[in-house]
Every structure is written in C-alpha cells, then in structure tokens.
Image (cartoon, rainbow, N blue to C red; front, side):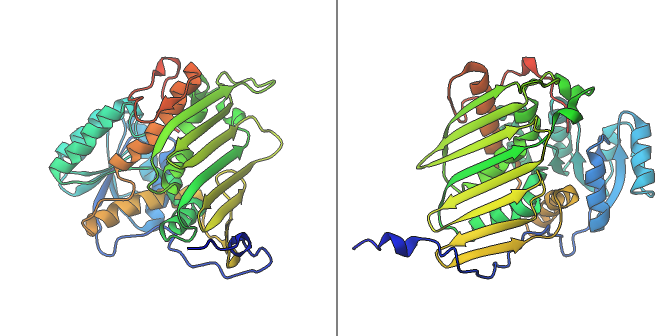
Amino acid sequence: MAKKPAQELRVDAQRTIAAPKLPYQPRKPRRYDPGIGLIACGSITQAHLTAYRSAGYRVVALCDLVIEKARARRKEFFPEADVYADYRDVLRRDDVEVVDIATHPRERAPLIAAALEAGKHVLSQKPFVVDLDVGEKLADLADRKGVRLAVNQNGRWAPYFSWMRQAVSKGLIGDPYAVHLSCHWDHETALLGTDFDRIHHIIFYDFAIHWFDALHCLMGKRRALTASGSVSRAPGQKARPPLLAEAVIQFEDGQASLVFDACTCSASVETDVVVGTKGMLKSEGVVCNPRSVELSTKAGRAIARLRGEWFPDGFAGTMGELLCSVEEKRVPENNARDNLESLALCFASIVSADTGKPQKVGTVRKPPFARCTPTER
C-alpha cells in the first residue's frame, strides 16, 4: 500500500474545530452513600474534607493521635462526626465502610493492612508506599478481602490532566509515544523553615509523584524501560534540597521527560505536551492550574476551555472514583496495583540521580531514603 503524502498528515493549523466534550470532571456514585472515616487530620486533609463536603459525602469519623486536630476538622467541616485518637475505634464501626488514610507513608502501610482486614475500602494518601513489594502485598490483601484499595493521586483529576487522560483513552491522538511535562515555579518559599526542607529528594518524591503518575497514564499501555534522573542546586538557593530535577524515561518505541525548575521566582509556568500517531495535546498555564488544553489533529485545532481546579476537584475525583468503583463492582482507575507502576518510575529516577546511572524501571523496589525523611504534602 502506497504511503500517503506527508502533507496529508500535517495539522491544518489555520482551521479551528470544536473541542470534543469529554467526561473530565469528578464523578459521584448514583446511590452508594457510605460512612467515611478519615485517619490523620494533617494540613492536606483540608483539601480532602473541602471536596467531600462539597460532594455531599458523609464523613462520620475523624481520627488523629493529636485529638485536637480531629476536633478542629470536625468543627470546620463535619460537626456531626465523631472524633478519635485511636484508629482502631474507627475500624470497629460498622457504619464506616470507607477509610481515607492520610498519615505519613512509613506509618501508613500497617494502617492500610488493618483497614483491609476489617473489610473497609481504603483510599491511601500518596506516595502510596516506599517499598513496591509492600505495595503488592497490600494490593493482594485487598483482593483476598474483596475490598477496593485506591490511591489519592489527585492530579489525575486536575481538570487539564483529566481532560488529557480522557482524550488519550478515547484515541483522539492515536497511539501516544512521547510525553514531555515541565514545571517552573517557586517551591523554595514554601520549604524554608519546614520539615520538607530536610527531604533531599523533595521534588521527585513529594511533588513530582503527580507528574510521574500523569506520565504513566498519558503513555497508555506503552511499557517503560529505563529511567535517568538528575538533581542539582539552583544558583543562590537557600533551601537544603536540590531544587532542580529532571527525569528522562525510555519507553518501548517512545520517550518521555519531566523537568522541574523549583527555584523560579519570576513566574509560575507549566507546559505539558503529549504526542500521538494521530495528533497532539498541549496545556500551558500556572503550575497545577492550566485552564485549557489544545488538541491538534489533521482535522484542525481545538481549544478545550476547562472548569474547576486541582484543589479541590482532584480530591473529589479520587474519592469519587473509589466510591463509583464499589457501586459498579469494578476495579477503580486509581487502584493500588496500577499506582505501583507510577512509583516505579519515581523510584528508578531517584536512584539514577544518586548513582549517575540509568535504572531499569521496576528493579528499584525500595529506594534508599537515608537522605530524606518522608513527610506528607
């Protein structure tokens, strides 16, 4: 069969077409209305509870070792909820069917196991685990108990990433083979004087985990082969961790890159590009909040104007997907086993940055975190 002339495959940049309507906004279950228990009430849970209250979800139990934190969350968001200092009191409640566990990663694994053993569906805060083998065991446990285990990778439901995921899933750009995501912003101001300033790989481990996850989703079924990572200090930075980080991932017949300039004091810019065999996606705007996605195909160019923001829509998306999966008797999109593939990209990039050598994705089961104490964002 003769090949089509190259010009027939080019995008008609002058032609504007209507953006397809895609279901990018968070879903809610139709009837399933379980009692939800939140274990750990740190700063990030303000976004959790804001989303749950807006969605009309029933949070009936709040738990924190420092019970005053749980009481403060109750007063602000769910006045009828009960508060506890012991997570086991939450797991004993028959009316709590879903548990949101938002502790630090090292403390979280045994809590997830206990919740699964108690027959609860679980939403785990990110990063899910610091050991891929532990993550696999937890996923296996959830399967044996017949409950769902999902991960709060809320970036998947940030409006721009969600629209791009849907576009890839619907085949609008054909087979994706290149993904390039870059962020340029000031992360240092938020770090100084906090525990985060002690995490050597703060950019990769805590922040970029969302972009590793987005990369995994946007590349479709293409298998990751190797990861090459690097980190360095920016001129004049005051924070202890290196604030410049990049990762290059080799895929089967594909490539991807992540770039993070976290000491950019002059502006905040994020650019995300996905290239496929039939078209391209591009979003650009303030980091974490591009307001549109451009779709280019040979038919023309479309601009999807988006509604919503990462905070709190991303958090409504993760919990909503878990609840819908229970109601619809299926595996959630943000299931734990799938999330391990995103973590494998991150872990391999971290070890590559430390060793200066590319790492085969999946072989780094537990990165050496001796130089960074995991802390929640």
